[in-house]
Amino acid sequence: DYQAYGERLRPHITDVGLVLDRAFAREKRVLFEGAQGTHLDVDFGTYPYVTSSSSCSGGACTGSGVGPTTISGVLGVTKAYTTRVGGGPFPTELSDEMGQQLMQRGNEYGSTTGRARRCGWLDMVLLRYAVRINGLTSLAITKLDVLDGCKELKICTGYRYQGKLHKEMPGDLQVLAGCEPVYERWSGWTTDTTGLKSYRSLPPAAKRYLSRIEELTGCRIDMISTGSKREDTIVVRNPLIRSRKRVTA
Image 1 (cartoon, one colour):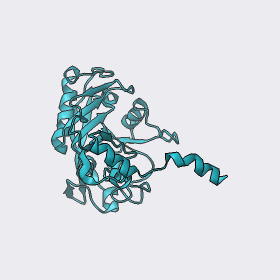
Image 2 (cartoon, one colour):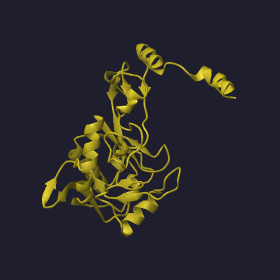
Image 3 (cartoon, helix red, strand yellow):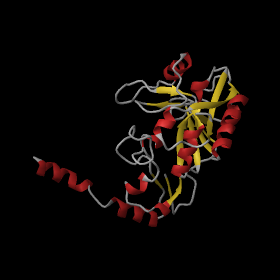
Image 4 (tube, one colour):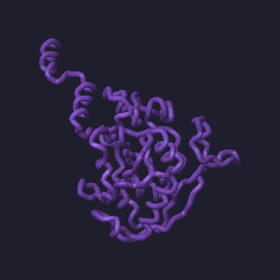
């Protein structure tokens, strides 16, 4: 039986790194898409609350056989708020009505298990860490529409632990678990942003929120999603328009 399985799979087995190298030689664009997230990475995540693989951008190289110098850009995808599945420290977690609202409006349930995701305010300490570890060249902010109707929004800009302010992510998991978030407060918006397709049409408060994300991460926002459909996307700049001889991951 296994021999038969092998014969069926034979046409689909090849040297992927070589195939990609030949594609680069023909000036083809190659896009790698990663799963899960930075803080689930087996090496750089919040161990032991991690997955078993490299979910950072470097995994595109180790998982495919291409060299790191072929990567011309790295687009980081993050929600307009923070979520986490399962255990592990979560400094900005909301265990109140606001957290429930984010979970319900954002349909925050695991796609495989159906398990509810934990929700909280946007954590810039974690996001800055992700920008640095992955070498992000731009961001895609998703689920902006989930924040519609919020009178006030909060952005975590640092942590306080035993009286000390942390601007960067602590390496000690016990310290991270004991951190209290330091927040900036921002006005929300009442305008319905669902399905908007141009940056100019966003409410001023939403633009200020997005601009602050760019300021705090030092990373530009190229894309914004305003709904669950593929077409509910604002493309500020097309991150795929780069040198044809390189790769966007």
